Length: 399
Ligand code: 5GP
Ligand code: MN
Ligand code: MN
Image (cartoon, rainbow, N blue to C red; front, side):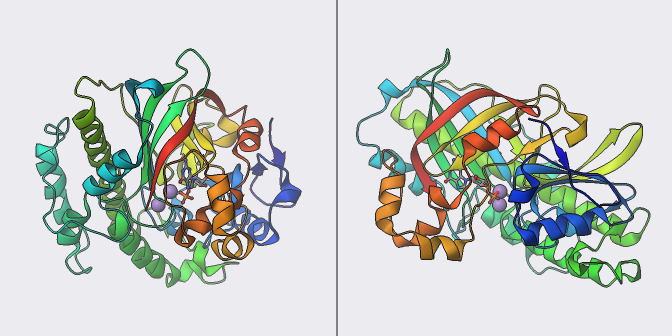
């Protein structure tokens, strides 16, 4: 659909939705970001909404600088998915036992593992360079107590909030009825703790005094604070990627227990809170995607809708105006508090009909109605991605 430039900003801020539809608080954040001297440009995705410091659903390209708050606190949060050889007809009518089996295999919410999982013994992950990965831990800032032990105990766990695991069925197209597995998770408590510590450090740096919003504080290239941040950032992004790979492999194992002959396609994995070094118009920039995925030419990405509306597998079109990005989901239409005031459990039951999932008061804030219309979001970004598959969940395990 193309973008609309936000008026009156120093750096270009390009918006892939109706700018007048953006909540005032989020619009102010975008103007604050556009005013930062280091910013090359900003791409605002159709799922944009208010977030701490920087909006969720924003892509910020900076020269020689990075803002840790523009990455989000769950460093490396993202999605993984894989197509299975099963079709909907293979699935049993009662999906409750499958949901229970998933919940019994992957701890959700704040649960961790009493005995850390040994990923070298998880089928498919044996050769993934785990020893080298854990050795790299030695370069991390150790001021956070017992970080390594916590990282090991939380590996292969989902986390709370709207992290989720789903079994989905493809809708329409040549692969109609094909079953997919999908999950949403990040770097758990470790990435959050690292992110919050670095955000606090950045706020105190002299070059950040006088910023329109202290939470937008940046690190500058060539400083020890930037070096320390990048080390921790790299590690947390890699930990998140591995955490999802472990859980996806476990999920494949749960399904294999029931269907021994099942086979799987090539897994797809994409971060939606992270930093990458990229080049646009010959300029090297640090791109933060906070609630946005990379959508370079041909890149496969995952764009979830809500616990009742399904999701999309998308292929990037490499639109440089958007710094080769797309939305990370439908995005919230209202806060959790507002969702709880607006909807009842009866609404939740209606809006999740046909999905084997929790339907109690504890997840009303995740009701589909609290999210934007994913169909509209996809239409608004049809110049950023093309749809590869439309999926509808039949099982949803919430964090
Ligand atoms: P976030 O990373 O910002 O927490 O959320 C990512 C996106 O996932 C949300 O914007 C929303 O569109 C989508 N989403 C949230 N919960 C669910 C769910 O249970 N299932 C699916 N398929 N999508 C969800
Ligand atoms: Mn996320
Ligand atoms: Mn997350």
